[in-house]
Picture 1 (cartoon, rainbow, N blue to C red):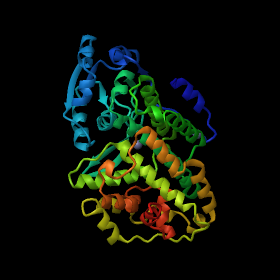
Picture 2 (cartoon, rainbow, N blue to C red):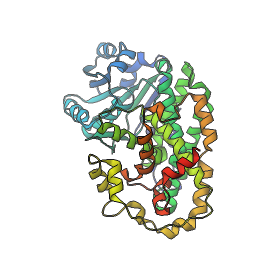
Picture 3 (cartoon, rainbow, N blue to C red):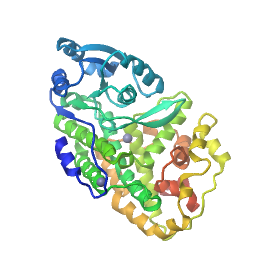
Picture 4 (cartoon, helix red, strand yellow):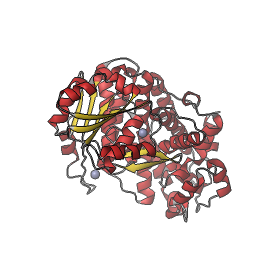
Length: 430
Ligand SMILES: [Zn+2]
Ligand SMILES: [Zn+2]
């Protein structure tokens, strides 16, 4: 993958936006781990750095720390025990440490990358990533989901300057992590559909060229579905490339729309509710993958409606408070008061555009049967049980997630149509 080619492909876009991204260096190759110092220097990365890892990522990149020291880097090392939640506490801790150095090297995936992305942005220090597993698409993303007081918010960041991944390390990553990466890419089917509908009904910015860029990336991942489960360097490298591409798409569009729709919000709901109980959630891409199947089931069921009747949304706060609990309800109120985002949409417009909305679902999202088949081949999770979400929480997420993000999605319209998402979902499970 050539970053300059992507820049050329995105130049002079008819949408009127200048599509660009910060990522300067991308190295996905066998043995890349042995050349990290060399690659950092090639892109003029500072030599006085903070290196952040967790015990696992530090172990699988054995020798990296010594290699950096041997090559003239001054390295302050921070190795977390294990990191399954990216919390604001760690972001603040790293911000303080970053005052003593000129750059941040994040070694790992998921939460490690998230805290590094936000802290380096806030401290205004460049970030480089050594990726250890192709488990999610956050590597090249310019936003970081961070938890504070058990509530998860996506913060704007800058993209890393450099991403390095050794395909030998990626290939050895557990199948569960690679399948999670696959799930995170499948979510883009929903993301694009929701994005187009938000554009259609709410006038949200949309770019067809970026959408097509993401569709191409999804197609590459689908072609590799049967190879996700095998230990193969070439495949692991290709999965990683796909994940980097979808991450770049968010910066091209200057929003997370091309990479995340209502399914990401469902997953965030489960995660926040579990955090309140002190429980750690399963991998991001694994949960998001399951939520993608749920969403596809519901959206396909909506296709059976020839027409809809829409009216202004009136929220039942008692019901919503029961679902979120006292720990989370204040944040939810902030997002929906004094008025909800869908009350900016004329109900008559939804009725009028219903056929177009259905066409978008058909155009963008494969049938649930097709998705189940792909997940089976890729070894990806398909049930609440596999992601340790109990049936009650599973259902609550389906029905109430829409209120925890101020964003128009197809799912977000259902209360205006007098349709309960959970009832529709239950019908599909008979
Ligand atoms: Zn454009
Ligand atoms: Zn994601």
